[in-house]
Image (tube, rainbow, N blue to C red; front, side):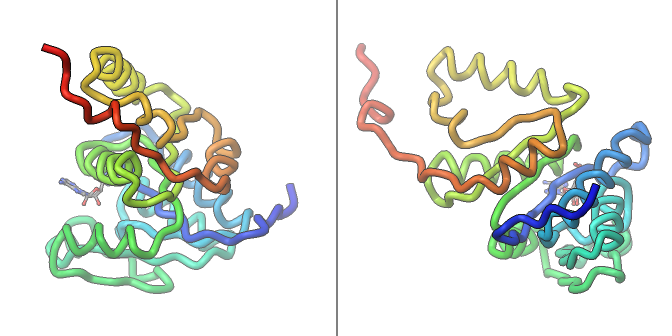
Length: 203
Ligand code: AMP
């Protein structure tokens, strides 16, 4: 398939696993995401690590001709192995600065299967979108259903009124690589608050 450059190149932040004990299929998925990102003419913002899915997405993106920016906290440079092949490698003093820098440099966020770090990153950008602090697309790519229990949890919290229904307007959820990029490229309406959201519950 030939390149299908998106009319508007985006800096896409990919959050994904740093684990060395996952099925090989997830490393391949990360590589597919990197390849598709490059094919559409986007650039990558990532956690700057060489390991696991984080390394795979950046290597594939570069192999496809994309520019990659890695942002890694000082304390993880030797643990997650900073990827010196990044076009730009930024070493931050701490995790908060890393995530702030990644957010600031990104136009959209793609979340692949991952562990506690990926979930923390997902919830940070998803929550900020729900609170209208940004209008950047947030998309989960989950071809194998690892996040289905999370989706069920969030549905239950919505049904019981703990989470607002608009959380679903603030996220794209798909099992397909091309669909994930279609969603990332779609401009998002800013989330509007409704007065009922914060009304006192009837006693
Ligand atoms: P994981 O999904 O646990 O494999 O982590 C993926 C990435 O998330 C790694 O680069 C971690 O450094 C990063 N991360 C961000 N916040 C956290 C956190 N609170 N705990 C662990 N990892 C984190």
